Amino acid sequence: APLDKVCVLSCGISTGLGASINVAKPPKGSTVAIFGLGAVGLAAAEGARIAGASRIIGVDLNPSRFEEARKFGCTEFVNPKDHNKPVQEVLAEMTNGGVDRSVECTGNINAMIQAFECVHDGWGVAVLVGVPHKDAEFKTHPMNFLNERTLKGTFFGNYKPRTDLPNVVELYMKKELEVEKFITHSVPFAEINKA
Image 1 (spheres, rainbow, N blue to C red):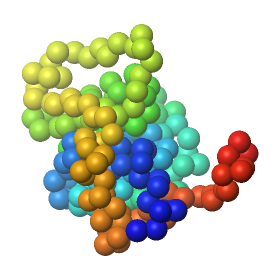
Image 2: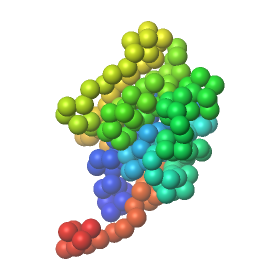
Image 3: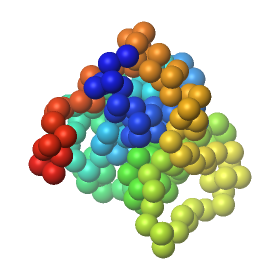
Image 4: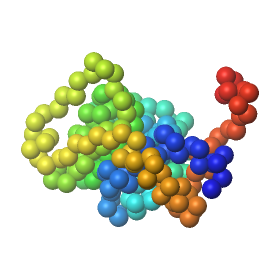
């Protein structure tokens, strides 16, 4: 494997990819919402694409990210600023009751709550990836749990680096995971501060 490519698997990409593939585990043909379309969110979208999700809805406050996110499997986009109701209600309307899976990649506590509240009653699974402020509190109505929604968290996409990263590299070598999409610039080490 070319080390100048697979080096990017050391953190964000593996985290987002694993959050989808290992933790959310979207069934083929399912609907997935990705909150935050930075590198980790794009990797989560890529994971949903690899898993066979049919609808991947990117949620981000920055619409300039939407076009790039299409390359990673996003099929639709929602900017919460474009709506005068909570984004979880917008997503529920778009998906006839809620998405099958959601992956939150922002670290914003409100996005975490929205990601949980937008999944479908009975089978919806929300996965928290972003790291919140140390004083943040997650508040939701207990009925959201009693209605059989599941909330999960993950660190590094539930990959064990030593034993599992070779499998991620193998995904890349088999051209199932397209690592090149994540690389925008190559800078020599001498210019690390500029980078």
